[in-house]
Image (cartoon, rainbow, N blue to C red):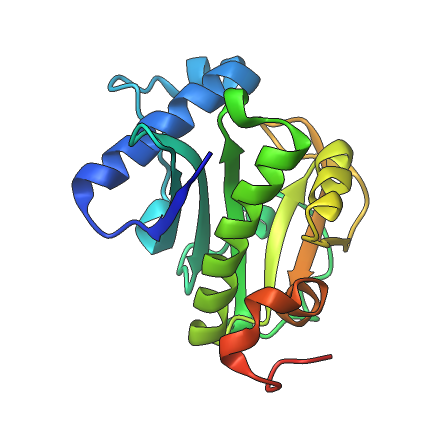
Length: 197
């Protein structure tokens, strides 16, 4: 199976990203979709305006994975707006948040998901380097934290487990861009040694 990974830059594809997100969230968080009263079968929120969106496309031309990088958001970030932890350790101009990390159910096996996550990591790392993002928040379930570590996306918890409505109990977490590069040296080649640990 071959996949194409790209930064989403046109409105038509972005609409398909929102449709894909709706489908996945309906599967895993149906109560969130019901409470959101979304009328067009697309899932989006106030942070999407301040986000760079990435997608994986399968052989049939269908979206099979998504992730977004929220950056320079005047609204703040979902994790800090919904959870309690010490925010003073991060410089605002070097901060972002990665979220809506979704893979289609038919590709959720270790090997295929590893390939998909690898493609998305390359795009995310490159974008974070270009923007000067040194760390990205995440609001993550314990099981998803473990899964991301398998895929060499090593978030570190920065607060106690707590309820992040409407998604249940999660940990406020952070991913350091340096660590992402160190764990995945093949995605750092174009940046040389400037971002090594």
